[in-house]
Amino acid sequence: MAEVKEMQEVKTQKSWEEALENESWVAPLVDIYETDDEFFLNAYIPGVKKENLKIKLEDGHLVIMGRIDYDEAVNRKYVLKETEIGNFYRRFKISDSIDESKIDARLENGVLEVRLPKHERVKPKTIEIK
Image 1 (tube, rainbow, N blue to C red):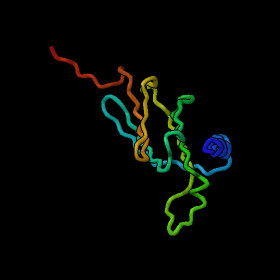
Image 2: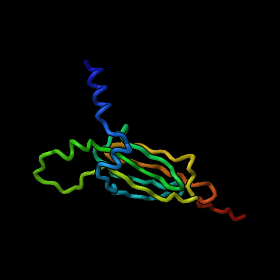
Image 3: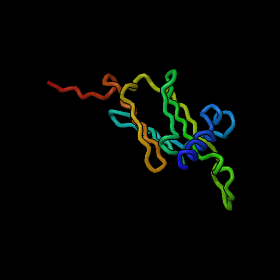
């Protein structure tokens, strides 16, 4: 019986392409900061599960896409609603100072943290005086 339910859930879940066409998408709030060695991008994406998150590098851009349970969110009986309903989409130009091969990400408590390490050539260097 559980197998039938899982199959039905898979059939009713929209593809990414269908969601892009038929559902609302909003830009998540983002904080970006840097250290000497790397940049950090924190995107606030409440309601997005790890399996409903896509991060990709495309034509020199970092693309973040996160899907919520859209139908459930739209059909709630709101008493107060201050946020916009939508999946999350944001695109950032990546500087050539970023080492794309070492980018990594983690999702915790509705916050996606993307670590963008700098190439060695752009890191600050202290020159020893002899």
